[in-house]
Length: 70
Image (cartoon, rainbow, N blue to C red; front, side, top):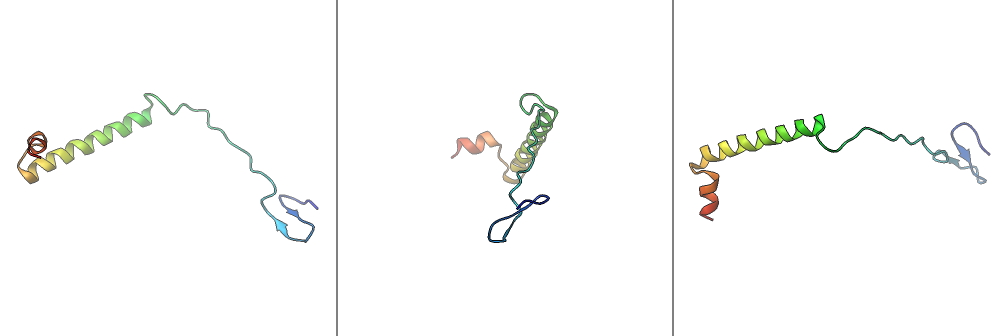
């Protein structure tokens, strides 16, 4: 037995998932030099630079000097 958006099986149980949803495919390009990728890379670079400056201020040593002493 079929009704709007659902089916009832032979035992009378309701099956809400019998009708498949419509699939939406996004056709926009997500690779390469997109505006999103450039913003993300810039923000990560700023975080890395500020972290390096904070590391040097807190330890008194530069990153290269600290890595050479390991």
